[in-house]
Image (cartoon, rainbow, N blue to C red; front, side, top):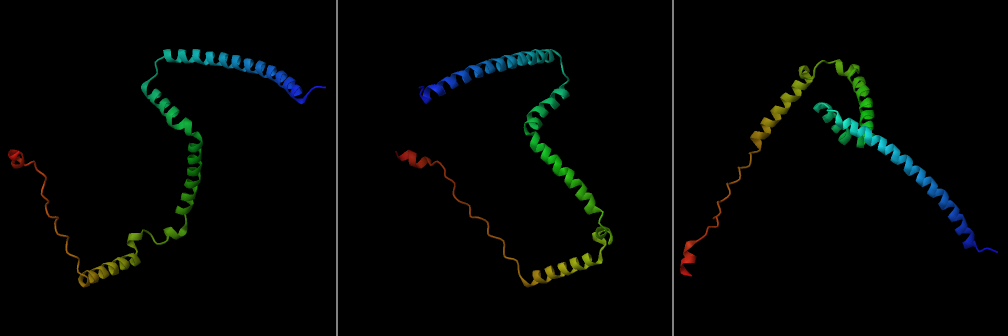
Length: 149
């Protein structure tokens, strides 16, 4: 009778052989694909690209592509914000009175506001400005101490 250890070891050896063959196949396909890409890249490097196109591609590779999920979220948020903004602008309450500066209520509010400020300004004196800071003596090298040494 075989021990459980021997049974598991035999199964492991069979599985490891299958995994090794799969690993070799995957690496060979990856290498062939990679060599094909590198040849295409070398061919592209040979061509001269215009500076603006290279700059746009660099910005795309460095800023947009690594954070594509975040940019998609920002775009979705703006796609929701824009229609909501147009819906809010078309409400009848905002266009009934005209512009806010022509409203008599606003003028009355500001007149009352300025009157109260004038009353409080006379009743409560402003505190005096703080005195300027006294100039402190600067540290200077004294020649007298050195002469005595």
